[in-house]
Amino acid sequence: MSSLRKDTLTTLVSQVLVMLLALLVNKWLSVNLGVEGYGEYSIIKKSTQVLSFVMLGGMGIALPRFYAIYRARGSADKGRATVLASAALVAMISLPVLVVGLLLPIKLAPLVTGTDNTSLYQSALLYAFSITIASWWYAYYRGAGAFMRFAIAQVLVQGLTALIAWWYGSDLSLMLKLWSYGTLLVVAATFGVDALRKESLHVTGHIFKTQLKTQFKTLAKYGLPRLLGDFFLFSFAAFPLVYLNQHLDIRASSYFSVGLTLLGMITPAFSMLGMVLLPWVSSALVGDRFQHAEKLVGRLIWVFPTLAAVAALIVIWGMDVFIRLFFDPAFLPAASVSRILLISLVFESIYLLLRNPIDAVSTRPYNTMNMLLSLLVLVGLFAVGTTLTDYAYAFLAATVLKATLSVITWQRCRKNWKL
Figure 1 (cartoon, rainbow, N blue to C red):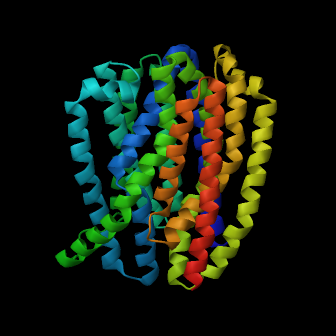
Figure 2 (cartoon, helix red, strand yellow):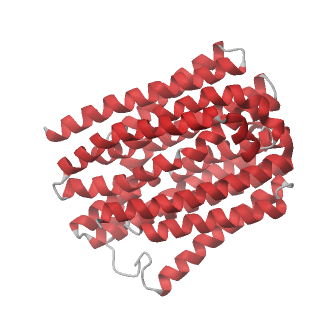
């Protein structure tokens, strides 16, 4: 079995397990928290993702890309310097973000949690930080080609999350704190196991100070512009919930989150291949195998939307059943809006396929520019909307634009690379 197929299969199996555990968590929380409480949870879940990717500073893309390239070249010292420099960048960004967050709870709490509950807000900040650390560690595993350990770490985190949700799901603030401690514990444990096996970061060797500075600058130049891209990406899902909570009510936001949650349950099946493609395409550039990578992406660009359309039709057709299965019957009024949102899965699959190859081929932050334009269109359409149906179609239109821009960008990038 080829390395790409093995890594893809490993990631696929882990993502299926993660998805099943997420479904259990979602069911428990929707029942225990009710419509309003689940609305708060959905806002926190999306807003903390935005915060975590700001603190990650684009290293979720930059680290696996450059680490994979240096591994392919056999440049061990540059690879070590890259890992250390990425950790330093994450720390330098996370600290001021957390300080500002703690100093401005009154202003930021309504945006992050949908309420003025400062205790809940502090728990959300801690949770965002734990996601940041876990995402950096996952990025390291991907760059190192250690997809089995990447898969195991993800499943462990999600499994622990499910157990905590089962026991403490009725107390949102406590649950977030325990999720945070559990995530950090898993990261520390996996680091310790790697260290015992002498397979950790290998930072004990001599790394020239100038080389570390060089990699720091390289990562900053590549990753920081993509920080905005990650911010725009997760704001794309968080903005509708915050907007609806402020302009309609928490119940409307909760109903809208049902469709987004159903989307979020399916999209990992498509995004997982992108996780593999980023380091794989990056190393292919070094090994002069770009033509093979280009052909693979060319085939998948037809397969992905076809599979997404089948999945979307199944969920749309059985929407009431899926809501009863994965949520509480009190969420059935969200069915009509969720059907509209599920159509966007077809176009989201195209974006999820192409975003990583685009970042692998080009150092320019094309995905950031595409996400900014798509987010601006989303905000503009929401500004003129009045009903949940209007907002659902607005989300769909912005997703279509995001996919279209990704296709155009990929065609441009691959042509430029050939030149």
